[in-house]
Image (cartoon, rainbow, N blue to C red; front, top):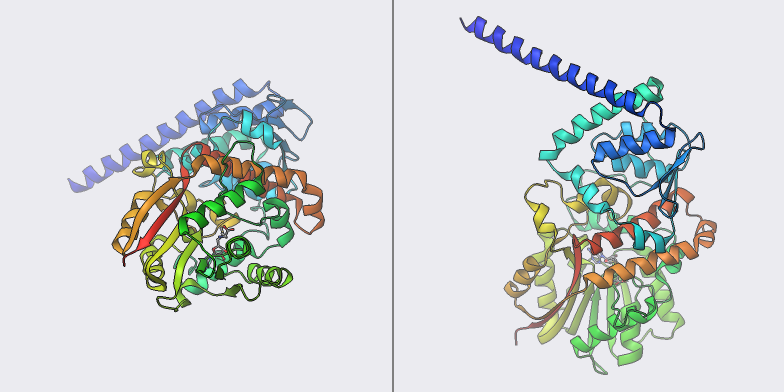
Length: 467
Ligand SMILES: C[S@@+](CC[C@H](N)C(=O)[O-])C[C@H]1O[C@@H](n2cnc3c(N)ncnc32)[C@H](O)[C@@H]1O
């Protein structure tokens, strides 16, 4: 009896599987026939649009010279049919395969003008990436990938199933410790993000060398003016006056401390875990003759121990590096280092108001997506603003003002991307590979869309320590 039931169940499941396969094959043949007469560029665009279920406002140029799509749209130049291999060998995250091919540069190139990108590119890139993070949609993604792989291989040849393409050397090599957020792991990930050729940062960030959201008091402000405006707003919130002390945790290339010392006469200390940033900041401080006013050290925030020493503390977009589980510990350290009544300005990237919509169904956090964690900010984690607010209050740092800088970040990213565009030659001469440059430019511009779409934001808090 039991044997009979088992046999029937196995028979039914196998029949279902065969029916599904036949169904997929028939759908595939119908699709294959419908695209047979199209040019290669049209085929690729149609296949991709079918896979993601949305129109793609891009122009495609295929290896045979065929082209399709609007003239002003970003141009995807598929240099050889091997581009398909990168995608097929990254079935869980096709966009990672795409980025790897872009960095490698042999099979894919991309060309776009930053102004056109921000003006015309309406497709919510981040939403597309989020589809890959969704568990309920995961099965659909796998099935779609399988179906598309069948179609692609039958159109472009089964030889594409040969060995996976090599991972570009520019990619961050994840170790099992990288998500643990120990001081060593944080140092390694920050080094990946900030220790690369400083010319890239000089040419992208401009004179101020600030790698956080600027503040555009008027829409026509330059990047430099907006970064200095952001510093001045923070200095006013901190109430800086001559002779006071300020600590900058995650001080980057030292720009805030230098500004505060020059304009407000305050003595500052800054810490960073990037050796290149530290060296750069120390040399700049020396060059400006500010050694008595500004001290920059290579140090993890956990090693700061001057209890009750500082009148004021600032931290601009550092907290997203240390992992959500360490936020409380970080804020407790800030509270201990401040004098009673001392002020703290915290600027941090947070989940945007539209993120909540996705939160329940997406198992992978947006910033866990391998394109971000393997090419931009490994192991960064972002939290909701209300969670920061609660933690600040709980450790005894009373939140006095909260300012959302989301729209300012769209313009900041646009200015960074334009600087990359205008300085491409010089950046490439400094040793950055053309593929990585393209990936970086796309990443910076893509982040602008992320902020524009409300998935991410940056919030500036002013807090006061209890007296
Ligand atoms: C996005 S950059 C911002 C730099 C600077 N605040 C600015 O606005 O230009 C993040 C900074 O946080 C620093 N950082 C990351 N993890 C850190 C840690 N555990 N301790 C101290 N600094 C850290 C990095 O070295 C880097 O300088």
